[in-house]
Image 1 (spheres, rainbow over the protein chains, first blue to last red):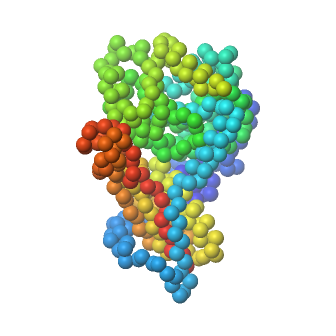
Image 2: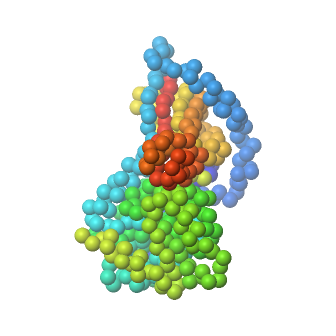
Image 3: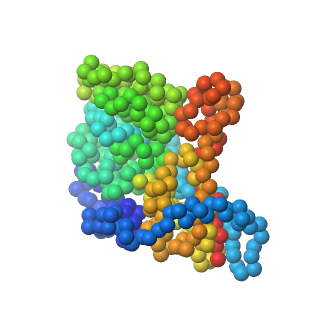
Length: 288
Length: 113
């Protein structure tokens, strides 16, 4: 079954495009289109009684089997993490990055916070001093990867189709094609979404949440999972502060409440303000 | 909609376990999904029927426990209930804490025939 919409196709829409190769290959071999059946249309096919399951909760303890039944009923005490496969793959990715001293970062934010602009600026300013490679995650288009490609660094675009996040399996596949060199920086730009990517460890060494000052300062409280799962918070577009009613201290206060260990960088990818501290941090992170 | 990935993972794991013992179907499935695990249960139940259709889970009775959030303060070691992952210690107001329950996302047990 298709994991993006639940339709009966076995195919998924995930696409990997290495920019510069002129070769687009799909994850699945062929695509199918979701446009023809909306969720509304699906609805009537699934007469499903949600309440039924809730009611069953009450009976939970009546079923405490401690022995096998005679008619071949097997009780498998699994105690297994539901996302353990993602976690396993993430740890393998992390081991690979650590062995080659590749500083891999997972950049997460809502759409429009300036992730790609910050990447462009960072790479343009630093690419003579250190090696970069980039994985771009978006639902559709190779626009972001095209922008990075202009800077002449290896880049792969992952299109997640209807999916809302990257996962460790996608990163593992992308890295095999990207072949990042030792002592380099790998920037993974996740799908712009402050909710879903929080649950999926990619095997990155650091998770960086980016927030721009054109957003609300209470975002850390509204989307706590993303801020508590990150180690670094980059506050972008600070050149706009004079024109906005944005309370920078309040944002930091809220973010610290969610995650007292967060480190902040205040930058403007447009004016260049504050970028030096961020650059120093990157340089230090691959120093042996 | 990461609930879809969660449910898809469940289906894969259960399928594996059923195959392992040459079973037929999963009759009952016991999950633990903590209140702070980041899973929206309405979305979960919305995608569930579509994901299990035609699988070993198609007739499974689903039992879900939803442990509430609990934390231990890193400063004064008070154990307290949390509704949000950023709730501070009610005793000393410290934000530093270890979350000890509520983040579970687990398959506890499967009954297979």
